[in-house]
Image (cartoon, rainbow, N blue to C red; front, side, top):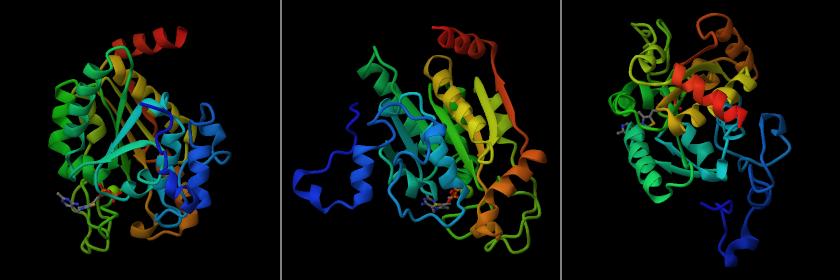
Length: 283
Ligand SMILES: Cc1ncc(C[n+]2csc(CCOP(=O)(O)OP(=O)(O)O)c2C)c(N)n1
Ligand SMILES: [Mg+2]
């Protein structure tokens, strides 16, 4: 893959918006490696993007994009949901699948990339919503973990089907009342994080958008470990002001509250994953 991921057709160059020109000239990797500390000093997404004010998902995506170990050699696989909108407006390789199908598509793609580029790591990162992982895509997600596929899966957990107006997902908290769940969710959040550990994931982390450094480190580790050890999973609490009906200015405060109560930071890795990490960190 080339660092020139978005190359406009010559005839259209002049017609591009200044934002788009900036994304090409100063994207997340065209001008050297970027980290979360550099966010705000480079263009990682075209604005205005169609996310609601205070969107936790778009923040999670921005932080994730600034944490990729090799952005130019990464392809992000998504699925319908709010995340689609930011990911299609970034300067990264991205492909959207049929809803729920993401880990199957990612598995095939990763296998193909290993054959096509045996001498290089090509990272396949699944980045989708809670409905995509925990509901409609759960079967395909689990089976990619059972098979030990070398892919990293990130769930942007806004605890709702945000994109379709507020249905409950398996990750919605018990009792939550949503636009299209007016009598309240009847059962607790599905323990996908725990399931990941017992389904073949060699690295898992639970983080929130209120702790950017932890989030960035988790995604970086998940991608690195997935290269050689096995499937990895990161669950990111990304609160949704529109559907959960809190003021957009409160997203970080709500995420922070979650971090202190039911969304505490957790990280798990197998001994093999630990050894791999220390080996590559030393070299
Ligand atoms: C096969 C299929 N079923 C249903 C839909 C409709 N659909 C699109 S997005 C979505 C919900 C997405 O929820 P989630 O994965 O939590 O992402 P969010 O929008 O909350 O970020 C649904 C049900 C679809 N596009 N395809
Ligand atoms: Mg959701």
